Amino acid sequence: MTFADHVLTFFQQLQIRTVLPDGVEVLNPYVDAQAMELCRQFYKKYYDDTNPRRLILGINPGRLGGGLTGIPFTDPIKLEKFCEIPNTLQKKAELSADFMYAMITAFGGPASFYRQFYFSSVSPLGFTKDSKNLNYYDIRELQESLRPFIIQSLRQTLAFGTSTSVCYCLGEGENFRFLTRLNAELRIFNEVIPLAHPRFIMQYRRKKVNEYIDDYLDKFRR
Image (cartoon, rainbow, N blue to C red; front, side, top):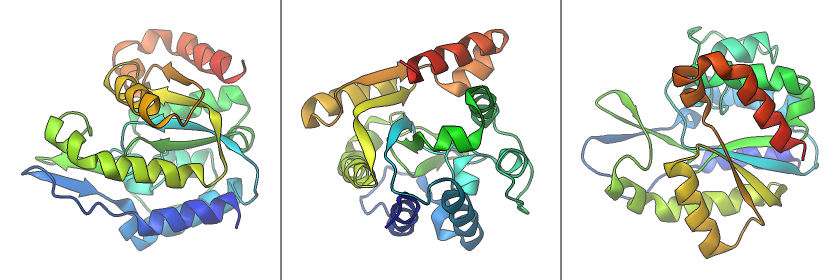
């Protein structure tokens, strides 16, 4: 099996079986046939080999990016413009995707970037409450109930051929603290390196986008 085959198989079996707090709904794009077809095209294009990748972990998918296309940090606009995969999804830009594809372009483009890196999230499925995005750590009860799912998903992701030498964590606050504690317990990665979350950058540090891109590239190329 290629890296792409592992990813697509993983997506198709993703399911949260635990009881979630009242009002919390799971955001699972992989139950949608169109999203899975777009994933198939994307991963077969960039990951149809057995090469190892370094892992970059976000928080969990949002409604307008990975929660819609199924591809982390890739909204319908970026999927068509940068990855050259046409789609009929509503063309709304997503802030995190805006930053990521600016960074990916600076790195050398999607083919070069995805040859070396694989995006996922601490929780590969997303959440909403009251029709708004919800982070897995926003509700303590949710975080605790998701722990077995998170651990199982991470171990499955490592089986794709992802490196355990380093993991890049998107988010220098709660996501980094959770992943650091989990890694101390499970001893999976030699090092967890925090990166500023792209949404934080685009909302609060937009004037310094180029500095953050340089910081990402510097940490990736060490």
